[in-house]
Image 1 (spheres, helix red, strand yellow):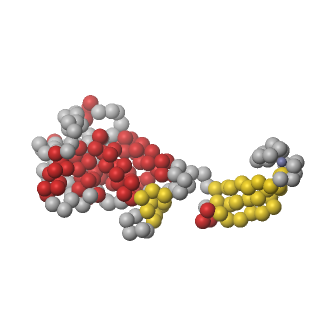
Image 2 (cartoon, helix red, strand yellow):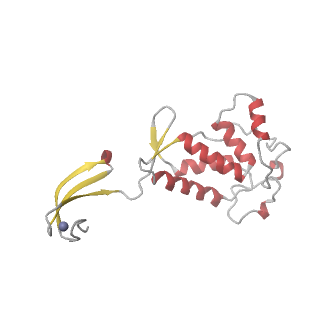
Length: 193
Ligand SMILES: [Zn+2]
């Protein structure tokens, strides 16, 4: 580490202590060249962000958990698994890059909704039905009507980007006119974050 004052690389640690809630080590260094002191921090590379839940509890960001709920929402939908894992990785990186390394479960939920909305209407509604805890069927229906015209419903699996499919889509999983597969309610499929 070069001295910020004289650029000498010779220095010694004069003090070392825990910082940032134990996530970093703070070191006071004294330059052997000019004698000035400066501070360095050492921390684990790209530490995971904390997810702050509604009740105020926090837990480490879990890419696996996020991917699991995305897969559930996209079950039997023509969505490539890599699309989901890449999104989860992107969200993890974004969260970790924050100064406080904290993201709320609501921010994650909103990001997932925005992502699914463009990706697949059925997955979006499944996720939204849990995440927003629709109170009434009217609310649910209104949400369905907010969809932009999307090619996602019309696209055959073969027309979508390459990648491992999330699940095999049997013929009976074809969405009905309102976009909800008839053989399941779509509610309760997604693990809330
Ligand atoms: Zn110096």
